[in-house]
Amino acid sequence: MGTPEDVFGLLEAGLALDPGAVAISAGASSADYASLHAAAIHLAAALRAGGIGPGDRVALLERNTPAFLIWTFGAAAVGAILVPVNLRLAAAELRAVLDDAAPRLVVAHEEFESVLGEALALKSEVDAPEVRWLGDGENAEPLGLATGAGAAPAFERHHAGPGEVAHLYYTSGTTGRPKGVPLTHGNVVSHALAATSELDLAADDVWGHIAPMFHLADAWATLAITAVGGAHAFLPHFEAREALGLILEQRVTVTNLVPVMLQRMLHEVRSGAVPVDGHGLRLVLSGGAPIAPATVMDVLETLRCEYVQTYGLTETSPYLTLAILEPRHRKLPEARQLAIRARTGRPFETVELEVVDDAGVPVPRDDRTVGEIVARGSSVTPGYWNRPEETAAAFRRGWFHTGDLATIDRHGWVDIVDRKKDVIVSGGENVYSIEVESALLAHPAVLECAAFGAPSEEWGEEVRAAVVLTAEVSTEELREHCRGLIARYKVPRAIEVLDALPRTGSGKIAKRLLRPRS
Image 1 (cartoon, one colour):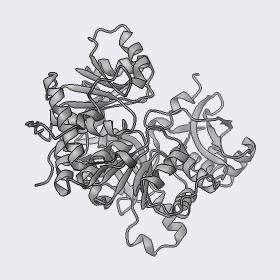
Image 2: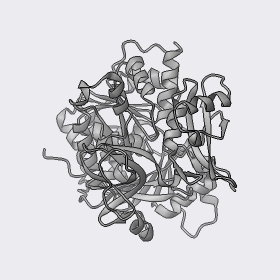
Image 3: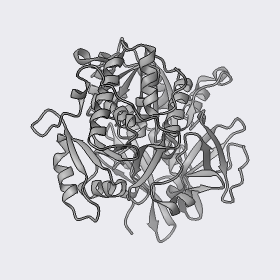
């Protein structure tokens, strides 16, 4: 068959390669591509019989399971828009998402019956959608794995055009107010096909769904791995030891981890709690936060696999850059190679990228001048869901403005220094939170951290930080450590030790919850 043109076409591509190849790797309950395809068609037929058609939204509350995979392709087969829902939302937040997306159907695992019931009971001007349940309990409807029973029925699937919306994701936003990001079939298919090329994905790969599938940190691989006929392995709840166990037991070859997951898994291996000898892991990707070169070295030495730093946004399907070493880099000293691996990276195959000043003029490619990253390309969303003003603000002169500040070198490699909203202005000096965080992360006792600005009568703003530690260390020792790496005015004036940092649904640190209210 030709090049896939829509989401269901990616499943058809995987099926055409080898119907008998393993699609779902789950020990005794493994399933091949013929079974996955049949399950998706059964589901699509049931959806169509229930009145779901092109453009209708179907919201999904489910953990990392094979059911998530089936619903991804089943919804696509009828042209419905899948709305993956953040499982960590409170009832009011969940209702806000449902009111904005206005789904015809909500499909939820019975585990979420309480929060969904509370959400739908809240006062709203939007009619409550139909709800169907996944799971094994008495509330479960026969629309999940059971749809895979028997051969696929005769069914004329919907062939989506590239401009039709495939998925609708909700970001946490800068104020906590969710904002819908529609991604078209053209967006996600072009990204999936580019990822197979960029990362050498193949039929013998097994992807570990360890990061949440409701977020694009993992969801893009649902499509890309299927397109090449690879296998999917699932971890419903993240625990570092269980994640390492999945990698060993299911022979996972590649996965994407948010930094805190990676750090916790490395800690388990270093402590000797989980031996990883004999694993098949060849590649770990990570992004969403800065990473220290020492941590990159830890991945290379402890997990003995390749590491690629990534950068992207929901609006870009997600990848904008990858830090994959080029032949010229491999001639450099090891320390320099590690620093390059920890950079933000060079443009992903589907995008054109620039760093511009406030007037939209590209900054010098000197790796020193700071500007905002802007991008355009086939994997960039056409705009925000029902938000024309916010779309106009983010898309200017044909470019999507990311809100991320970075430098760019003569080869087109970028290095993020901060989010625009996170820059700390202290005593008239710009302090980029990422350089403060990089200094803190260089201390062996720091597992994760966040630097942010707090009001100061003397300085306007002062630098503060919150840290999670793996060993006991005083905050003054951490400040002294930073003084050896960054200018004194950048050193946090106060450091708070926490058991965990507040996070968004994608695993990114929610700095707005750390900043003082006044």
